[in-house]
Image 1: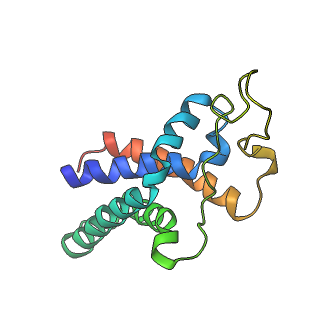
Image 2 (image 1 turned 90 degrees about the horizontal axis):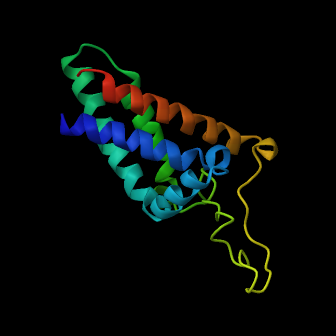
Length: 148
């Protein structure tokens, strides 16, 4: 039961981190993801371990392969990609919320803050990863309410 909860939590949190380009415009989500973004590789490893565990269990003892573990393994690979390969990450970096960006107050010098990317500007792999993040959130929420 604990492994199932870890897998569901990793899918939800990992999905939030992957969907930053689409959901990063919401201030609450931007603040939460900004705090957990440095730990994205750890969430990826947890998703890989939990998804791999259930993959092995369900392939050996049945009943069949479930989508929860496939999504968990994919989330884990995408989040831990930089640590696993040493190359640039597949998922985009965390945006700086406008309220915490440098120059957000009137008494600070105005510098160009790093805004969240506009969802209309997304294309290619960044859009694919962001949409997969939303799918991972839905799968994680579904896993919370599905009995083992």
